[in-house]
Length: 263
Image 1 (tube, rainbow, N blue to C red):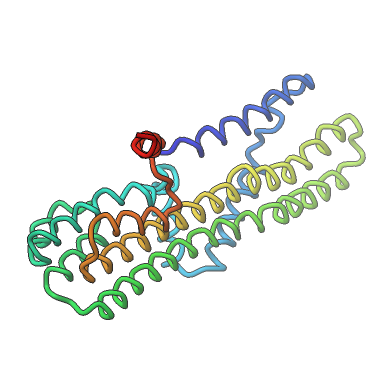
Image 2 (tube, rainbow, N blue to C red):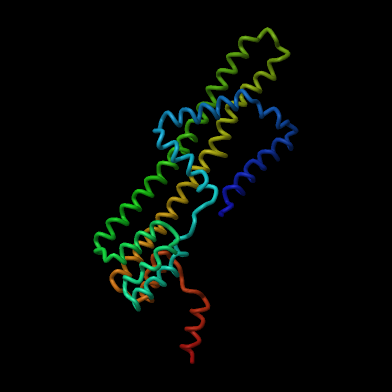
């Protein structure tokens, strides 16, 4: 699990709380039910209205993945792919069928099964490309949903403030209560800006990043599987995948090579 989202949100709200206490204000003055219900409820409502039900369900389901973070980085799949290449090199592509059950995900599992079944390289690339495209689309839909909430929230907060100020103008004959009512009116704007920048936009940005990591990993798996299909040597497969992932050789390996060269 990647804790950056939780850490970031705690830091953001912690800084806000620190400012409130340092200013001598009260947190209770900001936790007013009416503006919070308006801003949060209406923001989610117009977000649902601007998307399909399928998009909404997909976006809600993506929250768990957003909190957990990406399952694996692109570089983390290289050892497994090199292992598949070594087995295919020594025992043939058909032997990869024994690796299907232990594969870490459906994408890898389907690719291994296709290799074992003797699929054509172009057909394999097409199928894997289609799966990557579908995953990218799902990630983009979920990210756009929360990004749209971040766009609606500040405006809805202003709507709430206008509604509250209208109520203030109706009670000008009660000057003793005007200060409290005006302060409460701006709480809606605060929650609009707060929810957009502390909740919705961070969720959208994190989903976008997680999606990019997953697509990168899937592309690396595809290139590895195609190299295995072509019969590339395991060390060549590893070098190519490391280059694609931007992973440098371990410093220990480099120092060892340097020592061998010196001798």
